[in-house]
Length: 186
Image 1 (cartoon, one colour):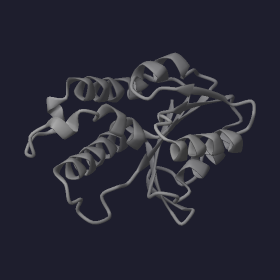
Image 2: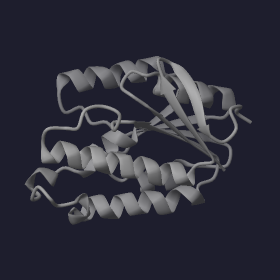
Image 3: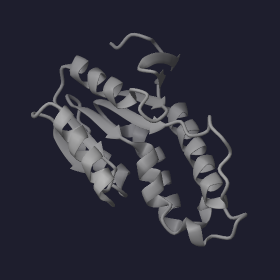
């Protein structure tokens, strides 16, 4: 199994790098998309991402049950891209706005169950798996308790996933910086 986490800010080039890694693998590719088209702007982003991918690539939508989708799609001679963990986290945190300001996302049963399932599943997967996530902790401290909770949970998730991945790459301005593991793809 080859497992890589690619982190970066918005429009940093992280999805493009994940797609290039998939092409370079020479394997059939499945993209597990976590976004939901909640409005026209997001629907357009989804259309653009699909149009940019090779036609032979399969797309599977998994806005909530990511671990189950990975168990179904990962295979020894397949490359799977998850794009992206941050949108998946946002989907799982629906309902967090009702939590008291000092509460943690641990109070959300679906969040806890799906996060724990993902972290347990990742080390067991065959094939090549490339996970894309936003690094949201480099900017200003969010004004709202919900914004801070999301930022904190995204940071915790990225740390937990990075600990499981032999390679972690940070992308800024389209330039990859290998933070963990070999800089070359084998």
